[in-house]
Image (cartoon, rainbow, N blue to C red):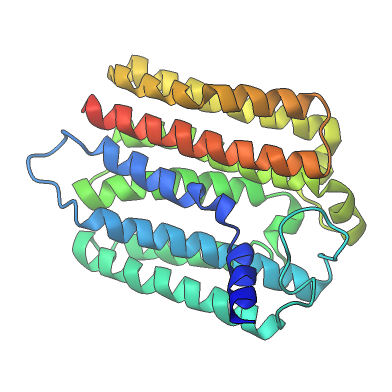
Length: 296
C-alpha cells in the first residue's frame, strides 16, 4: 500500500515537468562562468532546490485547486489527478503543495540573506503566482495567462535570478539566454493545454489554448520552439558564445514534436509529444548550458 501511495505522489508531482526547474538554473549558472574572479558556486544548488520545490508546489497546487473546483475528472487524458480521481484526499494534496512552497520559501530566504534582500519581493511574487495560477477566487490560469506565468517565472526569473545570486548583478547574457529557457518551458504548458482543450472548455477553464482553438494552439507551439532557437542564435551572434550551438543536440526531438503536433496529434499521442517537449527542454537546455560554460 505504501509503495502504491508513493507512486501516486510521484505521479502527482509530474516529473516530466521538472526540466522546467532544472534547465533555468543550469543555464543561469553557466552564464556566470568566466564573468567574475570568485563566484560563490555553493549558491547554485540552493537555487536549484528553490526551483524544484516551486515546480512541485505548483503541480500539487494545480491538482488540488482543479480537483476541488471539479475541473478534473477521470475521463481526461494525461497524468493522474490525485484529487480529481479521488485517490488522495484534497486536504493531503493541499498540505503537500504548502510544504513544497514552504521549502522554496525557506531556501529562497537563505539566498536572500546571502545575495541581497531585493530578492525577497521576487520570491514572494513567485510563491503568490504559483498558488493563484489555479487557486484563489480568480485564478489567472483560467483566464489564459498561464503561459505568461511560466515564461516569466520558469524562464526569465529563474534563469536571471540564478545568475544574479552568483554575480550579485543583472547580466545581459543571462537575460537573453532566459528567453530561450522561457520558450522551452512554455512549450510544455502549450502541449498540456492543447491536450485538454475539450475538457477545459466544458469546465469553463479559458486557457490560452481554449481561446486560440486547436489550430492556433498548434501554430503557437511551433512558434515558441522556433523562438527558442532564435534566442540561442542571439546569444551566439551577440555574445560570441559559439559553443552554445550544442543546443542543436535537442533539434531532432524539437522537429519531431513540431511535426507530430502539426500532423494533428490528439489524446494519448499528445502525451508522447509532452514527453518529447520535456526532452527538448532537457537535452537542448543542458546542451545550451554546457556551451555557455565552455565558451565562458
